Length: 152
Image (tube, rainbow, N blue to C red; front, side, top):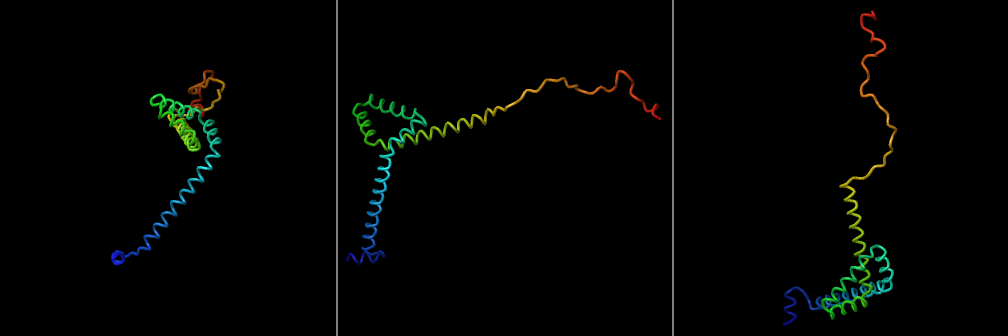
């Protein structure tokens, strides 16, 4: 009876088994990839944290003050946050680096926008001040201008 129903749908139970095997294999692959990434972050964590501190130290200070606020509000949650931060320091350091990079990019874009709105200052050189006549004199004072009758 079971075979008759599966044949009515157009599939066999072997397809379901193969799909389950493929799904389990995919989950195992994702697990090993995540484990590899976590191990890399574990060894690179201190370097990543130092890079985040160099880029923007305020990110680290904001994180510490956030944990302090949690600790003041609820002591048990604060202790849990501290313990999880210590255990998951590779992830925390990567998140802090990402946040520092984003803040740096935002600051760069803000400076660029400010420069666009205010304009750039141009370098200039002050030239000697001379009096330039506004219009040339029409007639000379010493002599008269020649007339058409005198020229013929």
